[in-house]
Every structure is written in structure tokens, then in C-alpha cells.
Length: 105
Image 1 (spheres, rainbow, N blue to C red):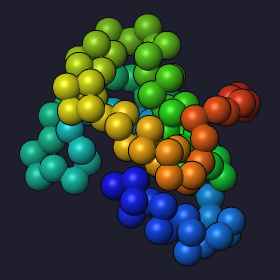
Image 2 (cartoon, one colour):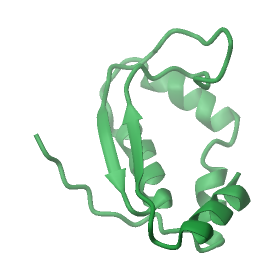
Image 3 (cartoon, rainbow, N blue to C red):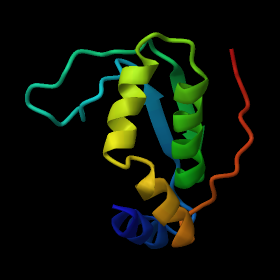
């Protein structure tokens, strides 16, 4: 996945933005035919020019959440090594896990 993301980022060479919508968060991919119901409340919408930073910010926001569904969500992420793609993308130079979170209300 990180290799594929790297190819897309390279192709668009700075002419791309990334938006992650952290709503209706389920432990299953939204591509599943029969996904589990959402287990966490909505966190918000994130935008970035760095795909690695935005994904790292999403994971960090889940970890900092006081939502009772957080443990179930993180168990699934951790049992599938879900952050490996973020690490691999950073190693490929797609972006960085460092970010500044700016909240707009």
C-alpha cells in the first residue's frame, strides 16, 4: 500500500491534497460488503498536503480519544499491524509522521 501511495504522490508531484473524514468509524473497511457497525463517535475532518502526516494524526486522535469504542478500534488496528503502512510510507519518503494539528471550529 505504501508503494502504491508513493507512486500516486510522485505522479501528482505536489498537486494533490489529502482529506480524511473520521466519521462513522468502524473496525472494518468501508469497502466490506457487511461491515461492523461504527464503534466510535465522529472525530472530525482532517486535511493535509502530506498523506503520512494526516494518517498519523488520525491514529493519534483515536489514541487520545476518551470514546469507549477506542479500545475495540485500536485492537483491530494493532492486530492487523495497521500502522505499518504509515511507517513504510515515511521510509519511502512519501511524507513525515511529524505534523502540527490546527483546529478550526
